Length: 137
Image (cartoon, rainbow, N blue to C red; front, side, top):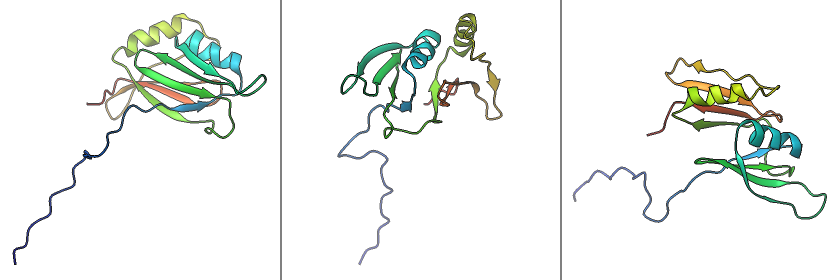
């Protein structure tokens, strides 16, 4: 009888692959959401949906490779989420946002103890978007 060492599990399944992640953030006011995400951050609205007149809004915004869903629907997500968005142009982004004179946010870059440079901004609904120089490899 021969004993053999089992092979370590592979990180890649032969049966399926995962794709991109699309976060869903809770919003409560359409005008404030558009002012923040489109007017201030420079995202564009890709599409929007309501089940009927007066129903909650669900929309997709994007900028470059970053896609976010925003939802007024109660059961979709909780307010106060946090997400990280990678960028190799953090200084240019900070300068661009500062020039927009958005009354509710004055973003600044922080050098972190773990070696990245981060700029965190809260949306009007308590969600925190951290733009970071820590690029995944």
